[in-house]
Image (cartoon, rainbow, N blue to C red; front, side, top):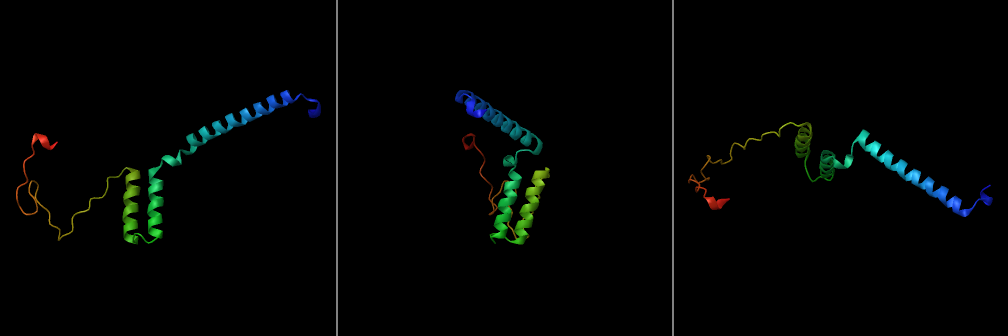
Length: 112
């Protein structure tokens, strides 16, 4: 039967089949993204992967890894970042003063 068909008719049918496959693939991609979400737009996953890579290549310690992981997961969950108080031996200036105890200069309009 195909041997007797006109080559033009065969090309039309093949073109239609390719069109159906392309449209079906596009529909499948849109459906998949709506159901599963778009993983490429998930910064938390890429940050955790990067952090895990740094830990496995001994760039950061276990304590640093655990602390950073908690912060990343907390941010993804909407929790505020943890407040780290300064160490007990740190020099902290009062507001409006520098570390020598001198008053900071007043802001002017040109300071921005």
